Structure formats: structure tokens, C-alpha cells
Length: 267
DNA sequence: ATGGCAGTTCCTAACTGA
Image (cartoon, rainbow, N blue to C red; front, side, top):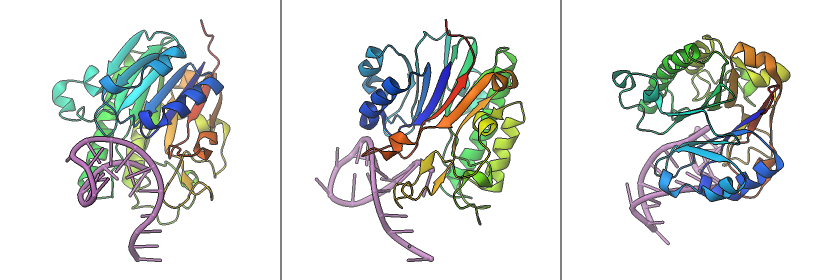
């Protein structure tokens, strides 16, 4: 079973690239972030024609998440409020950043974590509040999913120095600050492990490169797109890689897809 | 040190992203 995550930075702009990628990479589940489109305008048919079922939660201009699955999902849940009480969630579901499905008894959670803008900004506070709620959300789902969780998406956090091309002086930098990293560590401590780092320990592997500085040409990137697995699934994972090839295309997303393979029989 | 690019809408300017 193959599960992939990809921040496409507008599904309407990237539609053809995603279709091509799906044809070349026969994944069972594809989690998309930053679809940037309301549900009514999501380009469903090109993906349906490839045989995928679509589960989407979008909004105008910003954010937006979607999951494409080969098999019909056993369950679909949108937002934190599908799991947590309304008073806990507050307004944190207004931005469409969370969608989950159950496939092969595995719950696959697709996240678009807030960027946070600058350390100390209102958006940074929002990111930290959001991450605290995410921990509650994952804790609740852990209890009800004995077969395991796959928590993936654009986390907008590089957890370790080896995940950044130039990690110097990043303690107060957005996506690498000490507080953000600790917030993510607190989430992982509930029982999640990084699939990518099971197979690759060296530095120099990234999933995002800034458009503005021609960062991709020099591989000046960050690894901020992650796939985290509960212990049983982690043991069943047989590979995890970042596919940089779509980043080389004309008009690419600034992110590359990440794919994990699990040794689970496909029905 | 600064700004660089790309996407969207309130579309030829302003915003958000990371």
C-alpha cells in the first residue's frame, strides 16, 4: 500500500501535473494540501477518470485539503470538530486544514499546518494553538484506531537541523524555532515516528524550496512535509522517499511529494 | 541587508505563503 502527501499550491493550476504524477506513481492514497478552491469548483473529473474517490475540504483562495483514494473510504472526517468538542475547537476549523479517511482499517490524517508567518506574530500564536489542538485530536483518534494512524501533510516545521540546508541561527526562524519544534515533538511523543528517517539519516533531503531564490537549483531546501506512523505501521513500512521530479517541471508547486510504502496487502 | 516568486481575489494592487 502506497500513501503520498503533496502540497500542490493550487489544485487548479497543478491539475495536469498531479494527473501525470498519479499515472506514473500508482499510489493508493494521495493527500493534497493548499488546494485553494471551494468544494464546488474542485476539478473532480480528471481524478475520478483515473479511478480515484475524492474527499475534499476547501475554501476560497487559501488552505484547502483533499484525499484521493483508490478504494472507497470506510470513514471520512473533516476538521477537528469531527473528533473534538465544539468548545475545544473554537474557530480553528474555519481554515480548512484537516481531513481524514479510513482505508484498510488505517486512519490517514491529512494536515496543512499553519505557516505562522514570523516568530512572535499573531499567526505564529495561531500555529502554536493549532498544534496544541492537533495533539488532542490525534490522542482521541489513537484510542479508536487499533490498526494504526498515518499522520501526514505539510507541517511547516523542519524538526531537526539536518532537515534544513542551512540550519545556522534558526532558533527564532519560522518553521525551525525552538517552540515550534517542541510543539511537534510533543505531538510525536504520543506515539508517532517519522517514516522518512527510518530509511534515510543523512542531511540534504528536502521537500520544499523557495520559489524566490531559485532555491531548488542549489538544493537550498527544507524538509517540512512529513509522514508519521504509529509503531505497528512503522514496522510495516518498507520505504519512504521524496520525489523531486515534479519540482523540476515548468510552473511547479514549491513542494515535492513524499511517498511511503507499507507492506499491507491490497484487497 | 534586501528582495527575490507564485497563487488568489476584493484582479493591473494587495494579500498570503514559507
